[in-house]
Length: 258
Length: 324
Image 1 (cartoon, rainbow over the protein chains, first blue to last red):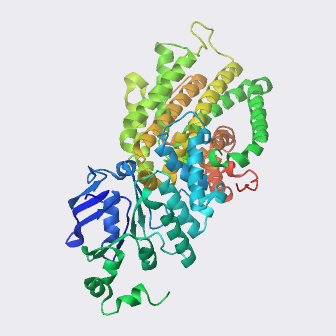
Image 2: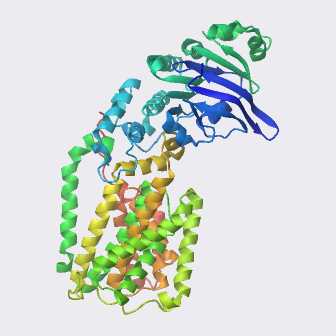
Image 3: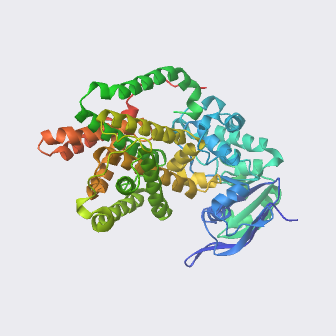
């Protein structure tokens, strides 16, 4: 079976340092696929290679049946990839609704329309408003994006990404810096997307990962250490050893802060 | 303000429209109220305002601060002067040709320039401005060298029409031309394309991740600003009936950018106001101060940066924004 997104022996070197070493990954359509791993495992490099902000040293990336290895980031976005940034990346001088409208307007192919006032494209506005309702920001539509709280910014990030109607949503550590309550609400939001949107999520918070993911890939030192269902990965002994050193796996997955 | 803030802004619209209408009536009445010298000066203010408005679209809305807008301005001025001397005295024809010349220059250099950002863009536009200035200085066969082109005939409003020699009539022509051009720039600013430019200004990388190719809109706005500068150059020559390399020197570029900064970037009308301040200080105050106008402009700049971080456009009393 071929997935919506496939990487084939994807490699990225920085001089003699191998950040990502022949990683082959398949993300099935409709899946919520999580990539986890300790710091320096190559998660962010993988993310950057898939979204097109970095070029691989070797290997191929296939998306939706096409080889996108050499395609720039905007072309990948138009093909149906949407991403959120690790640090909220918004249009801070624009109101919240206008932030989302930039995405819906591009999807409608109106980015270069010079005659009608932007606000008169009713379909663009309505589509943007629907996304805000979906993430629970409808009440903040007219507020400048700069005035949002951290949690709200993350919600807006997702609204902007979803507003392009992507096939694949790439989330780069979406719950970083979120309160537990915000994280839970965020997980709910991702769950509510259902199978219509395939999700690839890079995440530190293992609570979120094991709640959301239908499949988990563990990276370690740039290589795939394990790949399987959440239960398989949890039970995997090599993961235990590499990921945790001597500590018991349960301490990380089920102990401590819970 | 347009787009998402439209609902709350709708309440403010009648007041804004009334204010704009009053300003327009006042502008139209000027020739009936002042001497021809003052009308001439205000004509130059209007032409310079168009240059500043175009630059505001580029620098304020799209986030591409150019320090070389004198180049398309000068190219437009020379184009209009040459047309006037050798081909046609019809003002609107000169205007369109000058706009096309300004846009053509922008199209030629912009292909490379808009791929740079921030300070690099500023420096590259400065370099282009200097090159075009040098060219005007040296290419004597066409530009008349340092002497410039004198004796440009007065414009006519239509083919075979009488030459416009009255300062007041010329003022009306320039006012009408500036209003039309500024109206077009205003339309572009509040269009979907304008929003694309603001998105690029705020966060170009994010725009790319949304599927926008960011080069075409940046290139387009650079050409539009070039056309506006060229048109402004033609209007400038229509009044001065003389053009020399000084008209496309660094000082003109710097004053245009200064007008945008003190006017408040991104609003367009603020830049027009800034242009008025800059021209008035330079032309009226400077002779009285024994040529120390640039010093005053420097002080105005410092004052604007400290006292009005958003320029004149940010000075209005802010209504509390309704939250939808």
